[in-house]
Structure formats: C-alpha cells, structure tokens
Amino acid sequence: MMKLLVILMTFSAFNQIKGEELCPEGVGGCIPASNDCISCDSSCEYCQCIGCGENWACGVDDCMTCADADDELTVIYGDGTGSCGSLNSTNSDELCPSSVEGCVPASNDCTACDESCEYCQCLGCSAEKCGVNDCMTCADADDELTVVYGDGTGYCGEKGKSSAINIGPMFYSIVFMFCVLIFQMM
Image (cartoon, rainbow, N blue to C red; front, side):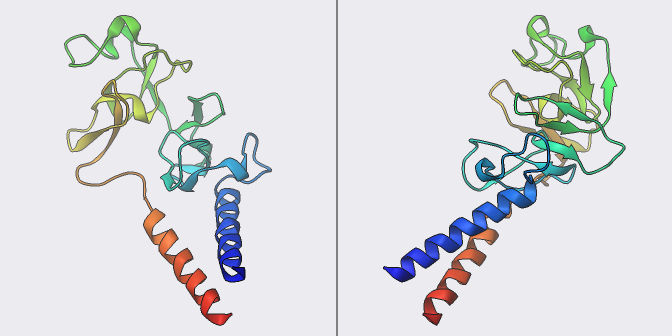
C-alpha cells in the first residue's frame, strides 16, 4: 500500500510540474494546477487549456503568450488564451463566401483571417479576428486543413504533418518507468 501511495504522489508531482512549466503562476491568467496541456504549440511561449482532459497537446489557439516577441496574441477565449501571429485584414464579405462549402457569411463574426487561411469563419465567437483554428480553406495550396470544430473549421499545415506535438504517450511511459524504478528500490 505504501508503494502505491509513493507512485501516486510521484505521478501527481509530475502533473503539477508539467502545468507549472507550460503556464507558470506569474504569467497573467495562468492556473498551473488546472492546466491540462502536456505540450505547447511552437508559436506559444506559454499555453494552457482548462477542462480539456488529460494528455491534451495544446494547439495554436491555446497560447497565453507568444514565443516570437514580434507576434501579437489574438485572444480567442474567455480565459485569455488565443493564437499568435500576424493577421491578414480582409473585407468581411470576402472572408467566407457562400460559394465555399460550409461557409455561413451572414453569421460569420470574423473581421480578419489568420495568414494561414484563404477563407475563415467563426460562428458565435466573441473574438472578431479569426484565429488559426478558424480556417475553412488554406492560403497555401501545399497545406491541408485539419478540421477541429463541427462547423468544418480547423488549422492549416503541411500535408501529412500535425502542427501540435503530442508527447503524451512518451511522457506517461517515462512516468511509468520512473514509478517502476521507485517501486523496485523499496
């Protein structure tokens, strides 16, 4: 029973460290103990997602701060998270025309698309500038759209590659091996 308690305490400590590294308490809006992220997108300096579930690889719109000091954080969600990068301003009538499958121009809340998007939309969003996960089609023909939301929007990235690195299985394998090592030492 004591060995099980040590293993659980070790695992809990790793989860707390993970949340603290990805979004430390000193960064405005960060709540390390509630952060479900196991990794940040490369565009983020710090990231968080609360209530996303365990093993969540934070995406391009989960940034709290930007990795590149020249990028601007476009807040998308109420907790202060959003996407980093420059945005292309476009006439709102051209953001997501009805000729593009899934576009609903009359309900689109966007006033600008992320530079990775050819067309974008956000239905019922509080943010006016669409983020990287609000693309309907990709600006670069060599990119493919990875759908994130039920309305068909998602992010654009190189075909066959994901922009988020999921280290979840590797992280938990290391934690498991560490726990086994501790268990054997007792």
